[in-house]
Length: 407
Length: 146
Image (cartoon, rainbow over all chains, first blue to last red; front, side, top):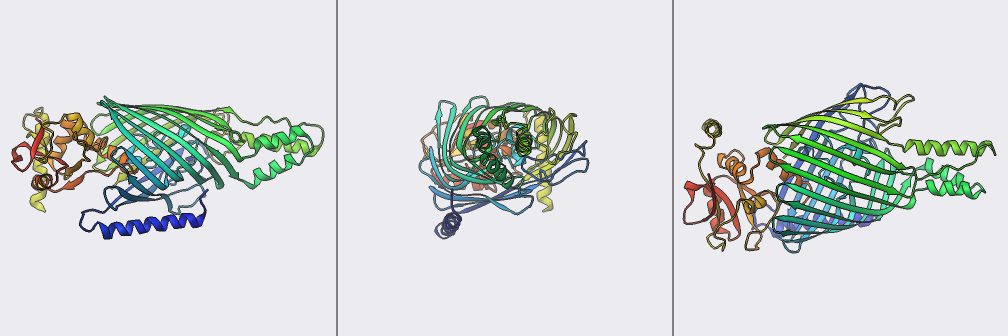
């Protein structure tokens, strides 16, 4: 994990690199390039028993529409020192998982393009867990109103601090690219601090003739959750002089346990047709459950209009906790068993969704989107926040509107 | 300003007419490189890969310095629809994917075909596109599309 002073030092070094870029590149044109993206979005549902959120967020839409789920603004600057060295920083503001809109430094990396095929990066950069990880927040770059949360909601980490190597080559008409990366990340999920340490991963894509792209990715690391409630429960279980109960505490704990995420993806962009598919698996040795998430999207371009259909599913494969705390021995143990059940139930994020949407390329750099999702939470709280008793039995209709722009 | 707008409207109208007449009225577009570039010709795929950010190398192996025309230029719309087969919104979305993943920066935009010629003539690794009628000895055409 990178310490704060180290990170500040690194940021300062980047700033220095950017400054030198100006001084050095006076003869060259455009040493800096600025760009930005943003979304103004509204979400509403047909229930008041839960809030529709992008997993991790605290506030979202119910029967009252919310503008806090999809609305965001990103600013990016790239400074070029020479053809080999450049530095990029991206500032992003959106409703973050601590419930505020404080702009965050999403990226700050220095890049060395060693040769046309190989690039090395150091700093803070996008974590490539998914097919569209890097631009999951750039609405304009995607067909959907937002990446399907049944898949993208599995990992709340969007960037990491570390290094990566990107290699790109052509084999006939096929473009192959491979990325290896390593580092650590700090994120929040509904205000709970979460760290992934010792992340290592690979990400490979092959772009074939005819607009077909295939991707495989795998990442693993150590998961640390900084939750007082969880910590107290684990400590309580570990203090009981019964090996079985201590074992339950050990199963729940998220204090450096192994975690991994694996995904395959297929994208087709051919003439009027586009299709996207991803199949992903999350595995942990803690109370964060093992899950499988997938989606399939098909869209058809009619001039400036692209209607699309997405079907997706998030399934809990294993809660990773076998609650063998005995009942009837003591009221305290019975209470502990109940708390373990609650903790496990809170993580049961089953749901399946069908979404129908329309993208309208209204202007050069503006897309207007509308999307209707019908979500079946399968008797659980699904990916909804602040669920109340009785939620989960009925399907939920989610209505979203968004205007995406880039500049 | 007024005359420019009128020009734009005219070119939009010409483009629309061109589309109605199945391209019959649209001018030819030439992809041009520096005369020192060893490539005698390039395929639409090779050119398309450079302008869509899928590749940054010329057939010679050198890193390409690609230049675009202004977004309002009729020749730009024609170039992308004929060479890459994509609409301008698709091209914009493709570039936003690259830019906002920090992988590439889009070709520099120049104001006119004269500017493109000047840039290509001065830079051995340059590649751009202009109306075929604007091609002269300062640049070399490696691909022409109707």
